[in-house]
Every structure is written in structure tokens, then in C-alpha cells.
Length: 429
Ligand code: CA
Image (cartoon, rainbow, N blue to C red; front, side, top):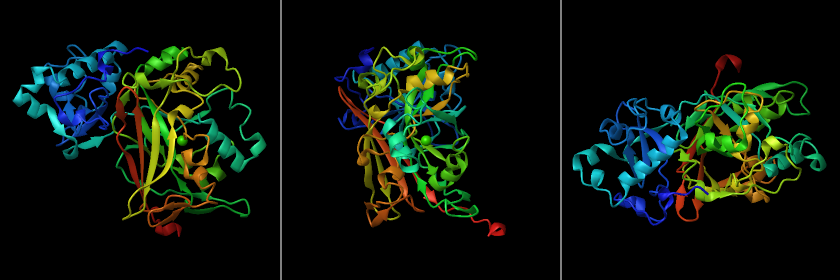
């Protein structure tokens, strides 16, 4: 592992709330986000219950990752992510030093501290990056097996390609939204097998998908594949991702070209990008390979992550119920394998590309990352506060959470969204 001073679990901060052992944002985490308290969007790092304003620190000359060029003045992390990987590391080390309990520069400068430290509860969080493209993979073997068993044949649940490549499709970047954004239930064409004709209706099988999102920092050149080791390093960081899905629209539309409208109406990501470097102590091996993989997918390092993941569902006016507990280590294909496969054809991967892992499910039903699996396509309703659920109902709020425990505790923060009713189109009624 490539550990350094920023991973030292003994390190503490002069920001007191960051020293709470259960804080998501201890000094070892330092995730990046974009926030505003007025009209202007600034880049910041979460520390305890505060945000360290990097736009202000860059103005003050305390942080100059781009040299003479500003990296934190665009209200998005893309300019910073486009800088060399060594600069990401140096910047993380500088921020850790500035926040360290023993460093006086900011600690003892009351004026600068007042301008550079913002309470999270008083700030609005925005999408942290300009998302160039969104690709959605299907990298959990348990999820693919469950879906294949439900809709095809339990004895041939995995299609022949699945054990040889990370299967994926190109999704919509335009409807990726930050945590806290409401999502409208989509309208679509629905047709059950027994129906003679399709009909237009709001989706009645609205689902969540609990995923890990990888954010590409370093691009490859169009026409040039990358190794899994290069791909691992190209990833700037990770977010939680809820890929809202309309199962009844999906089942009618998906052949032969894959999901389309069933996945195009909304994808929620958490606002804080937990860097690859912060996750270094939590690397682990992916599950045992069923078949040997082609050499371009081989890995000589533990490129999976041990991240505990949960999803909560809160009906309107009711407390949240945890409906699943799973772990990112269940992903059969690692994010580096997903990215290496994506670039294999020479596809240009860009700074700001978002790769969804696909629904993360584990070996048992209560480790499943979707309601489709948790309720087995609505057959077995779940008990939640105030009632039961098969799929998401209007007014329900979903919240994904993720954390790592090891040398230190690290959290991803919240990834929430509330489902609003479908739009009413009078002329179509
Ligand atoms: Ca998905």
C-alpha cells in the first residue's frame, strides 16, 4: 500500500468536530466538494461539521496546486482533477498540514479562519464536478445472478459474456443530480407479457440502485487503451450513487440495445468525492474469479474496496428504516477493471467521467442493492415505518450511506433523494 502521513490515524485537527472518532470527515478523509453560501460556488473540503474553503485559501496564496493558474476558481473540481496525479497528492498533504492541530498558519489567523471555514449546515452543496459522460456497469455477480434468475432462467442466470467482461452501457450525464434533489416518477411505455398492446402510464415499479460511482481524473488518449494499474491511478475518487430505475419500463424497452428511458430520468450522487488516496488503507481483493480473465483485465494489486454500504427508506412523515446492508467488496469487477475495459477499444475517457459500478448486491437477500431483489420483484413486501413497500412510493425518501472502518473511520456523507409524483400531461389522458 502507498500510505503516507495523511493516513496516520493518530493525526488530529484544530477543527474539534473532526476529532470525533465517528465523524465521516476526520482529518484522514478530506473529501472534495462544491458549495455556496451566497451566489458564488466555491471548492471545499469537508472537515468535521465544517467546510474548508479552498477557493479562499487559493486567493490567500496558501494553496497553489495549479501554480500561476487557478485550480479552485471555477466552482467545479474539473480543473483540479485535470492536474497531474502527483499534484492531487501534494494538495492533500498540504490541506492535512493546514488542518493539523500543530500547524498555526490557519489555526492562529482569526481573520483568514473566519473567511475559510464554513459550517456545513449553512452551506448549499452542488454537483462537485461537471460530468462529461456517465457510464453504468453491471459489475456485481450476485445482482446479475438475481436479475437473470428472475427474468430468464435460474440455471442460466448469467449471460455467456458476463464472467469474461464488465458489461456496461452509456447512460445520461444530463440527469445526474446532487444529493437532496427531488426526482420525478417517470412516464413511460408499459406492457406486461399478457397485454396485447403497450400503454402510457407512470412507472409502477420505481426502484433504487445502490452503486459506487468512480470519477475519472486523468484522461487517456483516444485510440490508446490503458492497463488496470494505469486505470486505477486515473480515478480521482468515489461517490455513492443511486441510479433510480423504472423496472416496468425497463422490461419492455431493454431488448436489443439495453436500458434507455428506464434509467434516463435521474441518478443521484453524494456531494463529497472521497479521494482514491483516502481509501488506500481500505483496499481489498475482489471475489475469487470463476473463469480466468483475459490478460488486459489482470490485476496485480488489491483494487477492490471494503466499504460498508446501507440504504434507508423513509415514507413521508415517517422515520427511516434501513432496508439493506451490503459492501463494495462484493463487486466482481473492480473500478479499475471497468475503466480499463471501457478504454480498451480506444474510447477516450475524460476528466469528469462518472462510472457507476452497477447495483451492489451480496450473497444473501438482505445484502441486495435494489428493491427488485429485496422484494423479489414485489412478491415479498418489506416492512418499513408506517407500512410495507414493494417499490418506491411517491413522497418516499431514499438515503444511501457508506463508510470504512480500519485504521480510521471514513464516511461518504449522505446520498438522498425524494420521489415526486409523475407529471400530469392533460392532453394525453
Ligand atoms: Ca445502474
